[in-house]
Length: 264
Ligand SMILES: Nc1ncnc2c1ncn2[C@@H]1O[C@H](COP(=O)(O)OP(=O)(O)OP(=O)(O)O)[C@@H](O)[C@H]1O
Image (tube, rainbow, N blue to C red; front, side, top):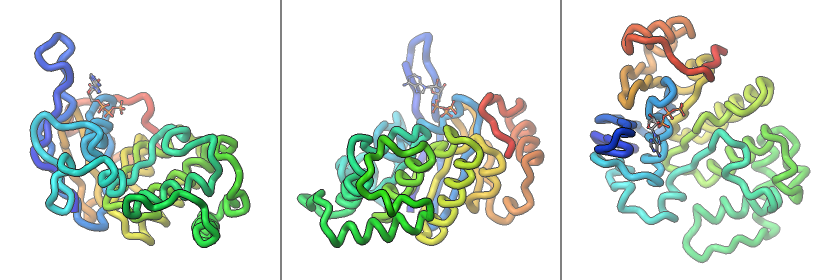
């Protein structure tokens, strides 16, 4: 379970450049929740992801995982606990290493200290099986360098790498935004399948309104560092893109100002 308690974050405090990135954020995710997050430019979405994953500290407040503060965990514990897929398909994988080497590296994350990275026959069989489930032919390319893969293939691999050791929380950071519509749809479908079948607790930031409605069981709107609306599963079912944008405008008092907003 993920609990965010009264988290606030200020950048450049006390200067002319002072920015409130997050203000008194409270959020609780139960096991298996899939929460989508939308919000304007600068709403604080990335800062929230960075604080949850422990790469950034809040000024005030705390993030707890199963009752334990993220700040108290070591880097390797945090990397085991949090799976993250970034917007940039180049992030999260090692381009000069092969698909199986990348998978082996990710596999070692979930294992005790000192667990080897070498690709053994047993691991290769497991990776092949996992890649086959993606259904995009990567299982036949275990020894291909990851740098040679397309953006969509890399995002599919990143998704697999960040989930197959079953993280406590999966963070999806606009992970389809850099892809063309067909590939974005493929990654959306794979995300849905993987998260559902593994029942992963997931937080996904997206600028794609249709995706925000389609994926997940709960939707959160952020504006100017605050959570302004938390739409529960029973209300999410009736949502449309128009209703969603209308709700945002009604509560925030302005339009969803983001030039990257994709309606669907
Ligand atoms: N390292 C930093 N130094 C100073 N200000 C920052 C820094 N990182 C973020 N900010 C500011 O904090 C606020 C929240 O930024 P954040 O990147 O979290 O928003 P976001 O919702 O992810 O925006 P976007 O959708 O445009 O990526 C913004 O006003 C931003 O300019």
